[in-house]
Length: 402
Image (tube, rainbow, N blue to C red; front, side, top):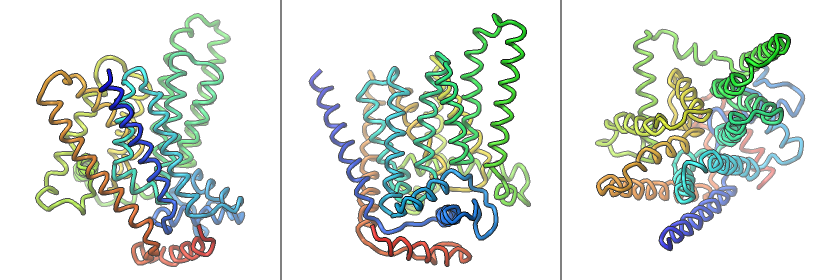
């Protein structure tokens, strides 16, 4: 009992220390990604009344994040420290929602460990400091699942409207938000199936009409915010089998990077060849916990729909997995927890976790060093047609200071 309490205290202290280090990153100079240049520029255009456009043209990005940037500009809060703080706050909101999602399936020590490992993931560390949609989407999506989980067991007007609103918010933040539609449908069907047969003919017609209207509205929102011009461009000239194999290699390689907790470029050459295999093992372990046979609800449906969508996305970036990394860790934990009474598996898991933590600390130290370096962003690191925007954004945030 004392040992368990001691572990819990250690994990909580470590978690608070990590959160503090995350907030230390607000001193970072402006860090940009090709996508963040467009998102910040759209936000400026919106604030100036020019609409959700980039140099007068529509983009593939939904309006949610640019609208947030526009709001910050209107409030005179367009500062690097504010943007980074927003990312960190949404990450913490997402982890708190995760604890609520699994409070009946994992103990407090396990939940603290999952949150700690998530914060130590190099993907979370790296992208918490860059103006992108991933961290915000993680927070919103986890809150959406928490509301839908409650609605799945007992649907009320509050949980129903809350779920629908949050799903729309997810779609408006990232195109992958459409992965929330299957769990939303599951939540509705589970409740309707219990009582639909008892309704009068008139109420059945009304219920089906409302459901059809909601479905049509969701399709319209998804269509309006989830253009696929970049997808069709990337797929042009590729045979279906070639595309399938290439995307599968992308996804497994990304998962391999996440599993070893180091980006591909930082891995020794001898390890790089095995990264897709490591990623495949990580996926099998997490899905082994997902299909544990005990329950299958909105969370599991979301993970499957998210994975299905991302497995047809023809681009490479480990950050695509950021919104579900804590869920994958959780399901792996649930699977391996069955072997807790043995000797080999617990020791192997402990060795792996220690290695993961060491790599995570390395990432945090490196990230913090960059944050305190005050070195400017190199506009040459992005596509040439965006270089002027990158330099302009950097000057803008430097002029406004921290």
